[in-house]
Image (cartoon, rainbow, N blue to C red):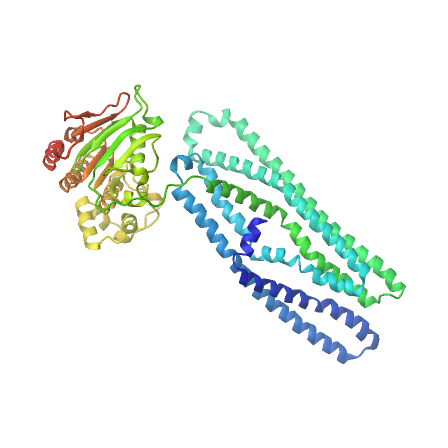
Amino acid sequence: MNELFLRLFSRPVVLAEVLLCSLIVAVLSLTVPLFVMQVLNRYVSYGVDATLHTLTIGVVIAIALEYGFRHVRLRLTARLGQKRDMELAEGLLGILTTARLELLSSISQAKRRELVGGLGLVQSAYSPANLIALLEVPFSLVFLLTLFLLSPLLGLISLLVVVLVIAFTLWEGRSLKKPVAEVARIGAMVDQLFQEAERRGELIRTYLVGASHGGRWRRTLEALVQSKGRLAVRQGMVQGSSATAQGVLTVAIIGLGSVLVVKGVLDIGTLIGANILAARALAPSLRLAQLGETMAKAEGALSRIREMTRLECEPSGGVKLKNFSGSLLLERVVHPLLISGGRDELAFRASPGSVIALTGERKAKSLLVRLLLGLEVPVGGRILIDGVDMSHVDLTWWRRQIAFVPREPAFLDLSVRENLLLANPEFPGDRLERIIAVAGIGPWLDTLPQGLDTPLTGGGEELPLGIRRRLAWVRALLTDGRLALLDDPTEGLEVAERKDAYRLLKALSEAGKTLLITTADPVLLRGASLRVELSPGFAPESRSSSGVATGAGMTAESVSTAVVTGGR
């Protein structure tokens, strides 16, 4: 109900116009039963053709006007839901893109897809046609009032049936929530099973999972069929109840109305008109009853979306340093995945222009990369950026200071150019061409049908690793960040591709950037001024007696020497 009010009152002026149109439509709808009454009472009794012509022309004009106002109302009602639909979609997208990743990762992919699909359920439930059906319920009073004027007894009976139908609809709507939620829950489980069978087909065949887990799959499918069956029974009850209510009302109106006709209180024309009015008064309530399941599904989807929106988001705003020098200090950083060898703290300093090699376990290295990107937060300790606690720094600004090359580069389903310019859309085109030449992807771009404007699909996963890495290098270099964060930049590359990576690293070091490299490459390890071991007993091991990486400890010359040696 709250969602309904949010939508209706999102645009009060439009709501007022919709209500006015609904009132006019209800009044114009009276013309048909009044026409029937007048024809039976006047034309049939006296046979004056002019009377029939006049009544027919009048009712046709009223029907045409009613159609016009219905069309206008539909267009106005469509505007009522647009703002709320945008708010829900933007809110969910915002949560998926700004919630803390350690919290978001606890939600399965299947549940995330269910949440996105829930937006469609909500939009369908509160479609313009359904909103109009809900708004028409109060305007049943127009027909009931007219019926009261014709016959208080028939009006009272119609009012009683309408109230009973509305009460049943509200009760049924509440009772449907549980079976609808059960179908959604089990349906998500079945969807996950099918996705598992599709993605892990080789594993299932190799280890005979299909045979050993067949019972689990069968039980889940049976549970879904049974829950859908129970829901279908409830739906049948609603439809049956609607038909029963309509039949009871018709019998009551015709039966009691006939008695009144015999007594001379009513005439035949008024009785038939009263029956039409009673049906018109009941129709909105019956349509409301048919929406019970749809609204229950929408409420369940909204409940799951609200639960999602309660996730803690990354902090917005914060300090933006005017000139970031490239200095970084990890001060007694603690995280569960970094606990090893009896030590639960990580500490090292990276001075501007220094090169730090991060080695050890893959999980620990990946975690440290995520900590430095602000994708996760340490349990204890601090990460200082030019002396400022990272928790106080604007993360958007901070990520623009980092030239990041991931181990497994990923891309969006955009053009090559748009993917390269993600972090810096205003980057000059001539400089982009120079960086592309330095990264060595010019020949590959020449093979594409549209060059830089060729769209990438499937996140670029179909591209060779070497091409993806080169694209990631270009994307990183466009940030002009003072800190280069490189996650295993030479792993899995051919000899020629490694040489290109060494050349790019040399260029970064010559530009005075601070380099943090997760690697097991002996060439890069020889060139580092500080090596941080992220395996059991990961105490920083440095070439300097102080154990601190300094700018003098790793110069462009030393990098160049290591690169040239490794490239031979």
